[in-house]
Length: 206
Ligand code: M7G
Image (cartoon, rainbow, N blue to C red):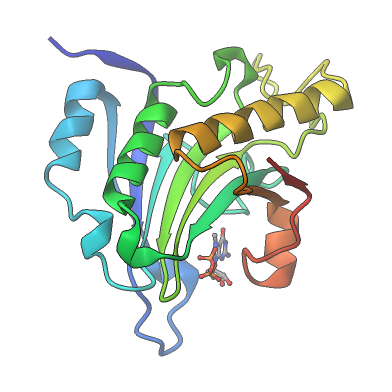
């Protein structure tokens, strides 16, 4: 018996750049798409844990049909909650990443009808591990896809839009078991793209 997930999910991998003119698109590879709990575990048990990945690697787990890029039509109006774990030796990144993936595919990061969560990302960098949760909006209402979806924040007031994002931020913080005095930051992808890096100025913290 397979236990279906509410969405189909695709795992992506960014392989480390060799440093010689590699561009983002050459490094980003689609690994596999799945739609059940059992398939998830089958994949999880057969891929390298984050703790064994080389520096500059990323895993991205996104709703099927959404590329893990700022430019994707479903991401371009959005942003992400993220946190950098700087004490790499004392953080159980494999467990944190597993828990954030389970929360994403189990739809517990948001109220399902909000349709904000596009995917989750882990970055392996020299000075930190970073976990990010990508959202479809930055709280503002955006043009909807025209296929009956409500995920564009249609009918949401700006206050409601922000509240939806803060709720996700709080849940992300809980899943990562961060102490209350640690802050996770929200930044929009437009800022990240302009800054040429994700270290863009944070708009919200929780
Ligand atoms: P990062 O991995 O988000 O953060 O971006 P880091 O600076 O801590 O490593 C690293 C670089 O990857 C960016 O400066 C971009 O060159 C490229 N990059 C990352 N993302 C998420 C994207 C994306 O969505 N689209 C494009 N075109 N490039 C990206």
